[in-house]
Image 1: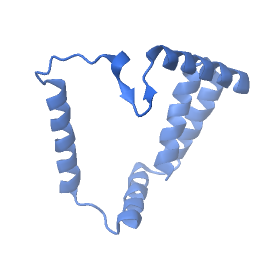
Image 2 (image 1 turned 135 degrees about the vertical axis):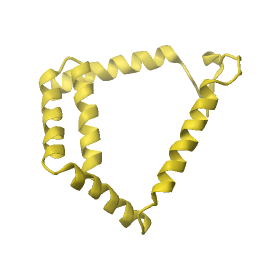
Image 3 (image 1 turned 180 degrees about the vertical axis):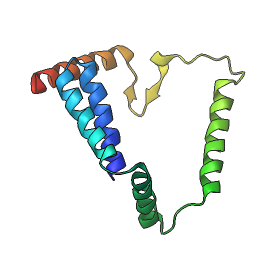
Image 4 (image 1 turned 90 degrees about the vertical axis):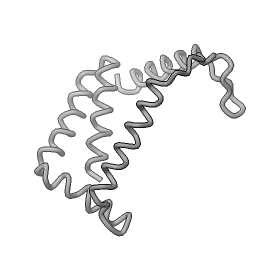
Amino acid sequence: MKAAYVIVLLFLAIFFAWYNMLIAGIVCFGIAIYLMIGHSAKGFGFEILTELEEAEGQIPDKTVWEEGLKAAGGALGDQAFSDNENPVNLNAVNVGKFKFKPRKVADASKKTGSLFKKLFG
């Protein structure tokens, strides 16, 4: 579970640094480093394995990880180097009942950034 905390704290540090809130970013980064250094790297990896064992009932074999990485790499390679030359029209993409509007996403992200600045600034 500490691995998830560290990852979230690192993302928060990047987010705060991106929105010119350097002190909050440094604090999040410092807490993440403390959590990583507070335990040895071997213990940090061992925690992940014990959590997997509790969730799955057993620790997956090394071949499961290798096959998963090979499948993900193969799918990524197929997608990246495919001969499909059909561009996607983003204005025509519908997700459920909502239409994808790139300009509205940019406006929403600006509003979210300004609200975070008001909240933490």
